[in-house]
Image (tube, rainbow, N blue to C red):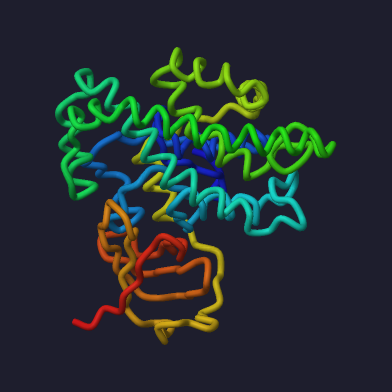
Length: 317
């Protein structure tokens, strides 16, 4: 069984958000292991780690469970600062890029993929995504919108080409923020990877009109790193039950809601998959909230969420 502090990524191969983390791990050449999880509910060996949070991926390091790709990438950078993917003087920019790629552009990509491939999508997958989003997963409606979605997708792609053109003209290098790839590249890469995974011919048609982006995309895809070991989900649960989280000071900083350590609070995404996770507050700050003794989860774990994109409420009953 791997060492207690091994990076365990709970993921599945076709997950675009998992690919973000995999690319970052390759860029940093870190050792890691993967736990393959189902693409749809139920996820019986994931929920005891997260208290009900179902999104993919989830990062497990010892007794710490990190939810949401944005926070996962920040945690990897914090714990493994070597081969940094952040750039001094551009702090915060990658988070802004992530908000664009993860929401506006990703929704366009989803509509384009499933609108094109709708008749090949299993009904159980459609039913799961409809339940997760709280609205219908209507691939016929997506299909009707495909011509408009192609226009939208190409417009998003053009922003990367503009950034690369400007960087080249200024002599700053071949990547989004300079001469080496960083977190902005990781975020911007995701939607092209996802489309290429499902609609490779269409992706290459788009990229043919953005030659710098095509070269940039292929360079990122060609980066190799350490190959992960596959860990069974039951082994991951056993490791979590025997592990202790990193010590975190019980603090709340300048907490807008007046929350205090020890209070019971619930956390959920603000857009979809709103499964509220309830536990005892350990710490709450502008960019992260940490819960302990989470309902439905292994008791000793610290479960971490970002603040941007997540709702937090006090439990009063």
